[in-house]
Structures are given as C-alpha cells and as structure tokens.
Length: 101
Image 1 (tube, rainbow, N blue to C red):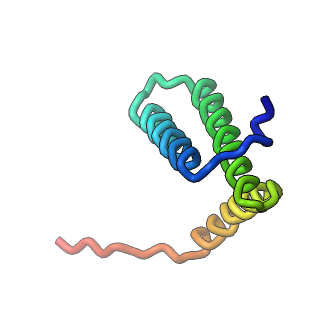
Image 2: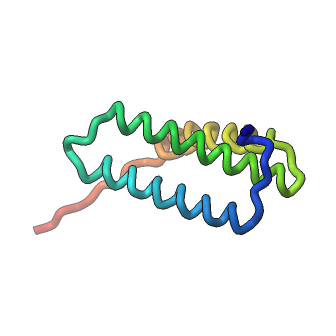
Image 3: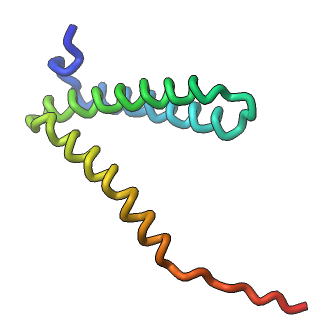
C-alpha cells in the first residue's frame, strides 16, 4: 500500500489531524513533565510524528488536486522562519527593570 497515493477525504483528514494533534500534545507533555524521559525516545517520537504529519498533508493535498511539492514549500518556509525570528529577538534591546524599595 502506497501511503502517498491513496485519497484522504475531509472527514478522514479531520480525524487523523485530531489524532496526530493529541499525540503531539502527549509527547510534548511527557518531555516537559518527566525528568527521566529518554531523549532518544523523544527524538524517535518527534521523527515518527513529523513523518506521519507530512504523509497526512500530502494525501490531503493530492485529494484536493494540489501537488505534493506544496508540503516541501511549507516545510522550507517554516524552517527559514526560525532563523529570522531568532535574529529579530536577538536585536530587540533588553528592558531594564527599576526595583525601588
């Protein structure tokens, strides 16, 4: 079965999006709340969920008639936004706080 060729209708897309969204929240909560969470397991979970999210997006885009290359464009935009945000936050001056007693 080729995961990229099958169709994903609106209801299926909504269902899978909710499931993957819940899994993302669970993984993030496990990483933040547990001191003993294994980092290798965390990287593995993030990788699996990222690939699964991309597969869902590709299937839905193909179902509505768009190219799967739009997912690559979306990933490129998200990855290129992070350094721009970092630079903006870097050059914002720090505010000093006056503590008057």
